[in-house]
Image (cartoon, rainbow, N blue to C red; front, side, top):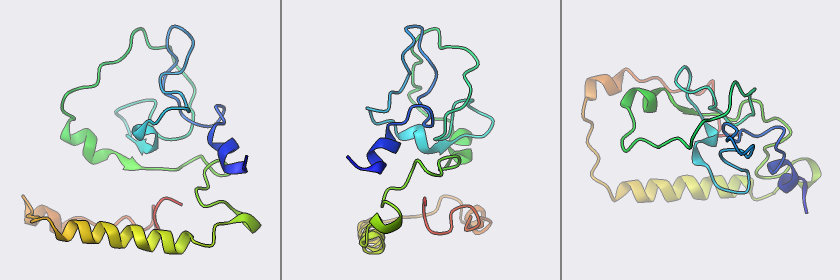
Amino acid sequence: MFTGWLAGLDESCWNTGQDLPSGKPQHPLEGFWAERFLDCPGSCNISGPAKKKRVQPVRKSPQRPTTQMETEDARSKASVAGLRGHFFPFGGGAFRCPGESLAKQVIFASVAMVLQSYDLRLIDPEEARKIEPGHRELPFGLH
């Protein structure tokens, strides 16, 4: 075992959704839940990767909508807030992965190569020009 594995299964830190009537978490840590790393300000009280206080348990299993609202999707952003000491995908200290930089560059290059295969066209070019980069929030990815 290594510390990343132990920290990744710490239920006192990670968001597991709301508690179901059975007392079990809605999204246990043993399973994949992609939305765990999305922070949706104002739209959902259990968003973000860090565990928050539970207001009340879920009465029944929530049904996922077939289509997601554009406004909710636009406000959602990747977040690792509140996870210091619990989320270190490349290790840390003396045991830090020496291949972190290489791995990130390979990922960036792979995504760029895949995107070159697509014919991308902006629906609203004027609106796209107004977009500002969020480098202050995530300067080099999710770490």
